[in-house]
Image (cartoon, rainbow, N blue to C red; front, top):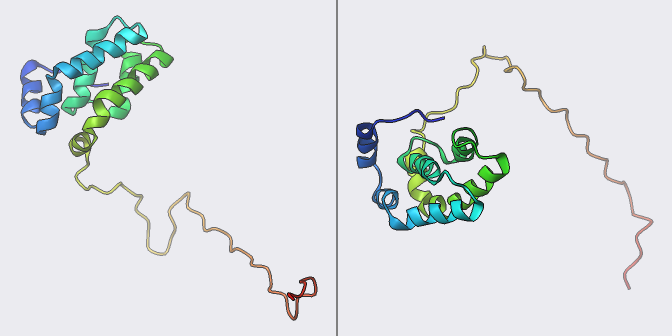
Length: 148
């Protein structure tokens, strides 16, 4: 879960954001969307939901961890958190998808793979057994009807 940030830390993060996300962070439309989703689902902790949605927009909480944050930090039930996260994703995060992908992209660091000696295979990788192909029939196919 994201740690708590000071106002100065969040402001520095905000200054580095793409223009579309800067607009969405303080947009009345974003606030209305969060309010409407919470009201529709009977969630009273609107400010907490807005805080974690803001963390996603600011780049400190990955969008795929938003539902978990709602479950653990806002203490919503799993189904309720799933519904709220799905709707906020649909109304707020999805329209900003290209900008959010830019914030959360990795810097081209390849995933770590185990180091193995030359000529050996890493553990857990087995070579697939060779696939046996059926032999082609020899001669004429006696079951095929002639075309007239």
